[in-house]
Structure formats: C-alpha cells, structure tokens
Amino acid sequence: MKTIVITGGVGFIGSHLCERLLKEGNKVIAVDNFVTGNKANVNAFLSNENFSLIEHDITKPLEIEGEVDQIFNMASPASPVDFPRIPIEILLTNSLGTKNVLDFAVSKNARILQASTSEVYGNPLEHPQKETYFGNVNTIGPRSCYDEGKRFSEALLLAYKRKKNADIRIVRIFNTYGPRMRPKDGRVMPNFINQALEGKPLTVYGDGSQTRSFCFVSDEADGLIKLMNSNYNKPVNVGNSNEMTIKQLAELVIKQIESKSEIAFEPLPGDDPAKRKPDISLAKKELGWEPKISLEEGLAKTIDWFRQSAGK
Ligand code: NAD
Ligand code: UDP
Image (cartoon, rainbow, N blue to C red; front, side, top):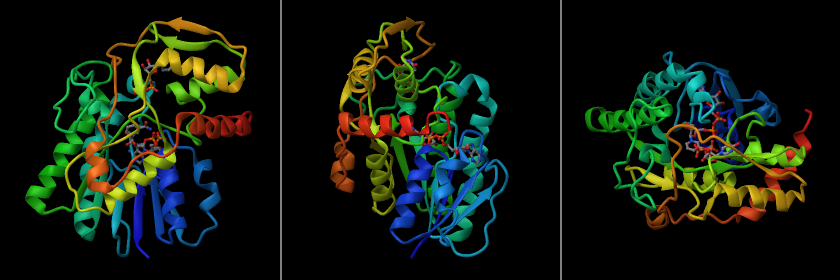
C-alpha cells in the first residue's frame, strides 16, 4: 500500500485518479482549494478510511504528517474561460504552488508527477506535436498565464532534479473529457453536450475548422499512473491522436444525442490554437500505453453522466 497525495484531487482528472488509486488499494490524500473543483466529485470516497481530503491552497507551503510515496501535482485551473478571470492565481499556482509541492516532495523523499499540458506547444507549427518540439507560445497573449505557468513548472521540476536530486515525472496532457467535468466549465465538451441536451444552438467558435484530439478520462488516468510508475523522467505526451475539427465534433454530439440543436458560429477567441494532435509514440514505447476508448464510447458515457447530473 502506497501513500499518494493528489493536489487538485477534487477536480475533474484528479478525482478520477483518486478513484483509481483507491481501488488499487492505496492510501490517497486529496489537497484542493476548490477554486474550480467540485467537492461532489469526491463525495463517494469520503467514507473510505483510506481517503482523506485537505482544504489547502498550494501557493502556501504544504505540510502533511507521515510518509508519502508519490505526489500527483494536478492543481491548476485549466479551462480557457478561467484565464481572463483568474490569471494571477493561475500563474502563482503553477509557479509558487509547484515550488511548494516540490519542496514537500523533496522533504518526504517522494516521487512527484507534474501535470503539464499540450499548451506548452502554444499554436503549434509542428504537427503532430512531439515532445522534442519547443512550441510557439505568445508570452503576452490571453492564454499566456496558463501556457507560461506550465512552462515554468516544467523548468522548475528540471531545476529541482538537477540541484536537489528530486524524483520527477512530467506529463503533457492533451484535451481530456469525461464524467465530472463542470457543466459550466466553458470547455468544448461540456458546452456542446449541455447545449445539445437542452436543444440550444451549439456555439462553434470561428468557422470550426480548428482541430483537437480528445482522450477519455479513464485512458488519461491510466497513462498518468503508468508514467508515475515508470523509469522515464522527461516530458511525455499523454492523449488520444484521433484528430477532428470542432465542427465535426459539434455534428457528432448532435447525432449521438439525436438533438434538434443547430450550430451557431461565434467569434474565435484570441490565440486559439489552429490544430493540435499528440504524437504518442514515446508513451507507447516507454510506458506501453495507448488509449483504448473510442470517441463514440467515451461520448456516450459522458452524455449519460451529464444527463444524470442535469439539475443537481
Ligand atoms: P479542474 O479544474 O477540474 O481541476 C483542477 C483542480 O485543482 C480543481 O479541483 C481546483 O480547485 C484545484 N486547484 C486549482 N488551484 C489550486 C491551488 N492553488 N491549490 C489547491 N488546489 C487548486 O481541471 P482538470 O481538467 O482536472 O485539470 C487537472 C490538471 O490537468 C491541471 O493541472 C491542468 O492544467 C491539467 N490539464 C488538463 C487538461 C484537460 O484536458 N482536462 C489538459 C491539459 C492539462
Ligand atoms: N470551442 C468552441 N465552442 C465552445 C467552446 C470551445 O468552438 O463552446 C472551441 C475552442 O475555440 C477551441 C476548441 O473548441 O478551438 C477546444 O476548446 P477548449 O476550451 O475545450 O480547450 P482548448 O483546447 O482550447 O484548451
């Protein structure tokens, strides 16, 4: 039995990690300040004696008694709607917050996995994106609080590895979706699914020709756990390489829900990446990981969840 700390543990991906790691028989400690996380995501685990929840903002030093084996540092707002709303908090969480979690990891002699993002590639000029690509980020644009915060966090992990021998893992997560995303999260999946369920127009930004590649959350959690338990300590892309346009996604959601909704085109937000698709050959080679859930199957599970949680 390992003791595993998950910062951002009540969030979307964090809560799925809690569930998986508890099922595997570990002791799990979730740390969260609830800025974007929904406590209901972990309600089902509160009665589990191997689970505990600590309300804490990681921009303050982290102290937990006892031994810790592994830390997943998932804490950070992640939706583009949060970038103009709380940019300073996002920058501080990924910089000062990551430093505090790293100091905690070093003090416990624990392995730390940092949740980085495909956003470190910005609006990529290389396609698909390999881990060796340095990226194309606008340092002062509307997404820079997130992109530069995550780039700083990667640099800080490497500095802690070189100077303090920290035991690090870095995952670059690509667009992930599934149950427990906030209905008003603002990301494309919850927006489209809720709009289609309510018979409202699906808001496609721009002409919908921009692409993304969507990974179901159980596959993503599996990749993160495999990376944590591997010997590979440089950044690894974990995502699904099934690329599609946002207009195609809108059409698929309408079809799967059998909704009468139409598509409404709205202005494209600034610096919205034109295309994104992970090259996952490194994850396949080093982790023996690849996604298993098709978009149709993952969408069906996600739609069911949003149907059941409507009005709650
Ligand atoms: P989420 O918003 O659902 O979860 C983030 C959690 O972190 C929330 O529970 C929030 O309350 C908590 N948090 C934020 N700032 C904190 C702070 N200062 N102290 C303590 N807790 C704090 O988002 P998510 O989609 O689950 O993302 C989880 C991680 O994965 C993030 O680091 C995000 O950048 C990364 N990521 C996610 C995606 C994706 O598609 N979901 C893609 C790339 C990277
Ligand atoms: N998007 C959209 N309509 C929405 C929400 C998002 O067309 O209601 C687009 C957005 O402009 C982007 C893509 O869908 O091109 C994915 O957006 P999301 O916010 O989910 O994540 P991103 O990949 O941009 O971080």
